[in-house]
Length: 231
Image 1 (cartoon, one colour):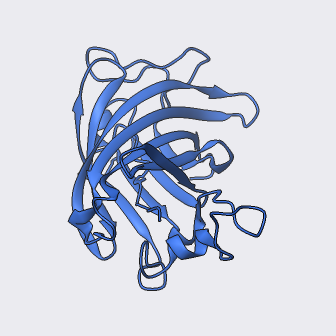
Image 2 (cartoon, helix red, strand yellow):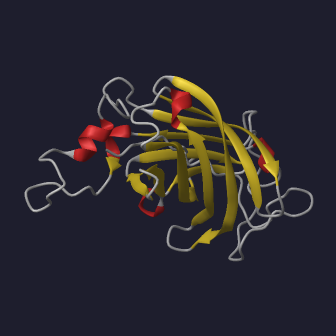
């Protein structure tokens, strides 16, 4: 009845000022407590260059799809990861790679006898199954950033290759850098991003129940990255 997608993060998570060429990380710039902003020269003055890991306890990857033209059905992936090689002096030299486990889809769809519209089945497993995300055939959804376009001090458009169901297509995310600061709890640099995108699932070969279930998939990403002090 409902339907899935890829993030990505899609993303997913593709949220950083990332670009196509491999990053050459310069000497770290000192991070401070102020929110980061990209200055006119492209530098992120409050960020630290280096390898950043996704802070998974403060990361969210959700997707939406229109159901019967009535409302957007919303679900999420709970198991995804990302690595960011960030260049604070020239963000366009940064790189980003994201991977999503399609078996980690969570719909919160009610099941059991107490819900008269539900079947006695694991709906999350059905969405992860061969008719939708096909996790048995494709165990990973990936996103690799390939380019960036600045749009103001703290915003931009990140383009990357999304691979889903064995098909790779370009996807562009609208990204906002929410903050660049040091994290006193972890004694390391931190970056925070929000990102959104949309694409048609049919382009990846997922046409089941269109148009009853919409073709367009909307992705929302909220992520925090922490500098890997051991890298």
